[in-house]
Amino acid sequence: MADLKILSNAIIKGDQKTAVDVTKAALDEGIEPGTILSDGLIAGMNVIGVRFKANEVYIPEVLIAARAMKMAMEILEPKLVEAGVQPLGKAMIGTVQGDLHDIGKNLVVMMLKGAGFDVVDIGVDVSPDAFIAKAKEANVQVIGLSALLTTTMPSMEKTIQAIKDAGLSAKTMIGGAPVTQAYADKIGADGYAADAATAVDVARGLLN
Ligand code: B1M
Image (cartoon, rainbow, N blue to C red; front, side):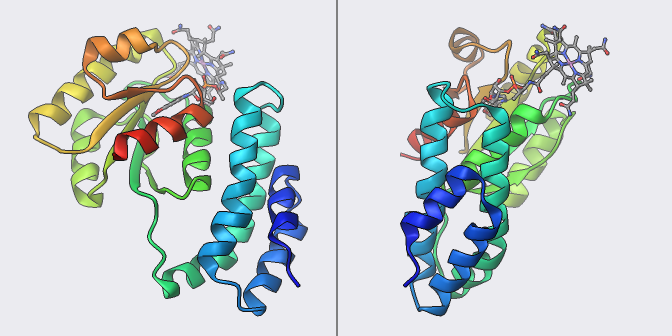
């Protein structure tokens, strides 16, 4: 019988083959896709998130785990859709205007997906208008902004203000190396996360 503990361990280790094999076997045995997702894939990514926060694993391990999760998700996703499993919430993330750094943003996207969010990644150098247009189009609950340059932090402030002026109900969260909780408070962002694992906790909190 397919063991979801083996699946979560495969995600933690970044073992793509085992992750894919156990996902297929579990589906063949009739285990609910939602159970495979929560008790196998998300359970594994949650462990990676906790270890990443505690500096017990580093960026390469997170990327490898996320890749194994992505491979397994390619098999699971159509079955989840068929089964009507709802995502935890819908989030959108972009790097603000003038800023081309995306490695941290991509990690946040992976961790959010790993936690069960439906995530729209709108890329880098995103203008306030584009943030708003895409948020409306995708009808998201959380809008994430990333910045790595002190010179692009003001783009965050402009974007947050534009989101408010547009009357969007989505909550905002910001992050990136130069950004702080104090800056988030100053510009009126609803949340701040120092790293990708914390971003999951913050996004979950913003849904409530
Ligand atoms: Co750039 N760069 N860079 N760079 N670059 C920095 C950021 C810098 C600190 C290097 C330095 O001088 N020591 C410096 C910024 C100084 C400052 O403003 N304080 C700098 C500079 C100056 C520049 C250029 C201006 C250089 C030049 O051309 N003169 C230029 C700017 C280009 C532009 O954006 N317009 C530039 C260009 C580049 C590259 C293109 C070469 C490349 C980017 C490649 C890419 O992203 N695809 C690059 C890189 C790689 C870096 C460093 C080396 C690494 C950044 C990184 O990816 N870190 C960086 C120096 C450093 O940090 N050591 C540097 C790893 C990543 C996982 O961490 O992005 O912090 P980070 O993400 C974390 C958290 O911050 C958080 O979670 C992530 C995971 O835990 N997080 C969020 C991030 N976004 C979040 C969003 C959230 C929540 C959490 O919610 C929405």
